[in-house]
Length: 465
Image (cartoon, rainbow, N blue to C red; front, side):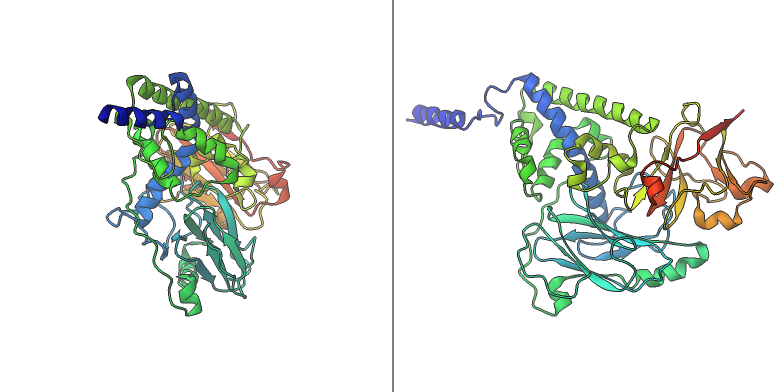
């Protein structure tokens, strides 16, 4: 009887297309390798974002912790080299952070009236890292008002009086507030604005009883950035995150294909159950994915791919999962309508940037980056892609600093990029570099059409002999 029952279970598993080990019947190592490459490319942004949001909203012992879910944390200063949780951080705009759990009910975000010449934005980023919505100066204006943010399962009626109603396709999202700081003396004005931002459940906003709380989440330990490259626990985190991401109709077949190697929402991916051949195949698939990533990173470096190609909505990205992964170099970057990011990774001759060299970047008269808000140029050391500590505590040069910069005879401005001071008379225009490799990111907030269509070109970085 026991033998017959075991045979019966095996036949059921085979009928369902599964072997007792949980892998698809007849799945060859070569097929597993192809699927693993695809699943790794697809999953990397989810895993990297989970690492950050676990630090920000879950692990209260982490130095980067901001606040529990559905609470707002205002940061009344800009990023410095001490901030290491997020790659390529913006140091122009003090941030306010809110991780939103939308399972029980919608969340309401309220903003005060903000003076017309001050830029602010609220960027809504889902668990896939799609920028699925915006509020702020460009989209909803600087008047006071409230925004309703709902999750994928919400079917309630929308009350009147909201500036905007948005719905996420994932249960957990990130709301990143940016408030422009004009200069160091302006910080108290920014603090005043931040103190008036509010995040609250819809029931609290309406003065109604709260609905039943959502189930407590059993969070799993994230991987470090290095472990994301080397540990097959990566796929278990993909499964965990996908458990809060209802399947998008466009991805039904994709997710079914991933399930053949055990990558499936809410399931446990246990690499110890893999045969040596399957384990090797999945690791080879991961290596294949990194080869594609390196090729596209080179295109980004050469300007063949721009930031405008890799940040955006699901519709805009249109299945470009490699581009979505590439965007984790500057994770949580803006969609191009909100900001674009010309990148300096090589000089005008194509050589990689090193702080032992001296460089100049010159804006000719009338050729500053074309924006409706402001622009900046920020220094990052490599490979960490973090801000650079330096003796004058300057991490960027931006458009609000222009009145203090020394002008050329023709009215243009030259920025000196190097590790050592260019001399006291030029220090106003000095952007300090590390001693080793570095990159610079230009940021154009609310870019005009000439920036978006490419008719304005960022100046080249010249290597001084």
